Structure formats: structure tokens, C-alpha cells
Length: 441
Figure (cartoon, rainbow, N blue to C red):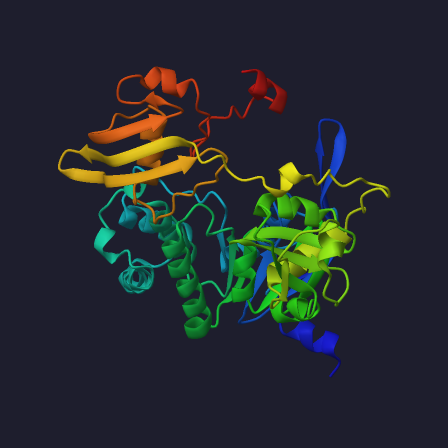
């Protein structure tokens, strides 16, 4: 049997020559442009691409919520254009902003979605028990959805999508905004669905590390298909083209900047104390080729390629190359020795914040030097947002000292706020104002 025929018979979802455009402010924007892809039954297919790639549009076409301008969409052997309601009745769809009702409990949300999916009353206890065991939400059935952590809300959304045991599950960026532990737990649930129920999963994500958890991946960029295959197939194409560069006499940011301008280098990113590079050719570059100046003790060593390397390579080859004759920035002695000044602009000592008897932050100390990028890492509920709010003078500390840009936050919070830029988790943009109008405001 020909491979194309076998793939078609095995397909849970097929898009053939699909184009979908939208009119906005007098111009036409192509969300998808002549895209043909397949999601095979019983596996996880990842839909990979940056914001604006067309992932959500493809998901909504597959869910029967949009119709294409051209092309065909087949879902579980149904025509999604002519039979959208039948498609919607058998597909589980979890959009980016899942419609949980925050003033209802976990069980009440399940009841609501069970009503929408016409799950018989007699079958619900068994469904709920199975879903709560799978998601770990059993102890929280009476808790309001609005009081769940970000990861728990995503698990509840997934549970609601699984009511009715859909053979095809469409998950639109389910791990966005959740902590690493919750991401791992969500992926464990997804893999269990495939293994225990033979569920077909189409999952979109902008996190390239998640692509390697999928059986196959579809790569999209600006509405166009870059490729579809197993993740390892993309990675294999970069064998012999990925390296680590280390130069102890040069700051890693200066090194990255210089290498990114070198001929034959497709990508250069900081990775720990080194710069990771992807080259056009499968040959180790020399220090002179990368830096273009005498620099002692430069180490260049091969490393195994990652899926992220292959995606960036495909992405850069799909856009216009920069014009010839670009000039690299001057690489002076000052650049060679460029390092953070060592001056601490944030100093936190024995910081604590209590809410009643509960400690959101307890006895935390750290310092951030000028020019540093400093990360606060932790699971949901670890105290990251509380610490940020105290650093911005928006929440008083219960104990300890905080100084930002030389200002004591416990005695001059308003003065400190004037010297800090703060972007919260839920940044207060005005959706009915344009970009320029938001900036002016």
C-alpha cells in the first residue's frame, strides 16, 4: 500500500491545501496559507510555532469552529465544513482561555460540562472518579475554581474537555503560564490518555522543549508549513553543526553579539557560561572565523543538536536573509572586558511576608548586581509574585530589609516605585485601545 494512502487511512485529522484569512483594518491577514497536514490516530502530534504562526486558527478549524477559505478539513472521517456540529460533539477541545467558571466549585464546573456533553447522570460518578484520579484534583472537588492555582486550573480544564471520552483531543497551549512541576504533571496525564485510552492528541505549544515529547510535530511560521515529521528527524539534519564556544576573557553577552554576526552562523544563544551556536556547514569553525580578533583561550567543542536548533534553522531559512554588506559591531578592548559592574542595585535580607499565620515568603536573602539578569524560579505558590510586589513597593514586608536602586523600600516605597519598571502576570493593557494608544496612556 502506498505510504500516502496508508497515512490517510490512519489519520484522525487531515487538512488539505487549507487557507484561512481574516480582514483587519482594511487589509487581509493570512492565518494559514495552503497548509496540508495530518494527525495520525493514537499518537501525540505537536503543533509547534511562535505566536502568530497560525496554531490557534488550525485548532479552531479542526474543532469545527471556523471554516476555511479554501481546502478541506476531515476530522475522524467527518467533513468539518459541512458537518461542524457532529465534529464538535465528538472532539474534546481545550482553548487557550478555557471557560472555567471561577465562582463555581470543581464539581460544579464538571457538572456544567457534563450537561453540555450530554453525559448521562448515572455515568457521571465513574467519569468524575476517573478524571479526578488522573488529574489529582479529588481532594479539591468542593473548592472554587477561582481559588485553584494556575496548574490546577489547567488540569480542571483538561478534565472538562475529557468528559464524554473524546477520541480526538485538541489542546491549545495547555502548559502556558503553569510552573514546571504542573507542566510535567499535565504531560503525564496526556501520555496516560494515549497509552490507556488510545486517544489521539493534537497539542499546540510555543515551548520548543515540549516538541520532543511528541510522536510527530508540525512546524508552522506565519501561516505556512515548515515541515512535519518525527522530532528526531529534524534534529538529525543538524548533525555536526552545533557547538559550544567558551572564551574566559570575554563576557558571554559580548561573545554572543560578536558570534551572531559571523559568516556561516545561523544562531548563537547563551547557555550557562558558554555560547551555543548552529552553523550552516557541518564543520567546526575557528576562533578567527567566529570572533575576528585575537582572543586567548577560546574553546570550541561539538555538542549534540536539539530540536530547538533545527526549528530556529528552519525558521531563519524561511525568511529573507539580511542584506549583504552588514557590518559587525566594533569589537574593542572595552567590549572584550565588558562585565557587570559589581554594584548591587537590589539587596534583600531576611525578607518575610505573612498573611495571618501563613508565610508567603520566609527569610529570603539575595542581591542583584547592575547589568545582571536575575531569575526567580519556583512552582506556583512559591512566593515569586509576592516578592516582586514587595520589591516594587506595592506590598509591605512583614520582616527584613529591601533596598532598590539605593532606596529603602520600608521607609520610601513611593520613591523606589518611581525607579522601577514592573510588568505583572496580568498586565493591564486596554483591549479596546490600539498599541499606540496604550503606549500614550
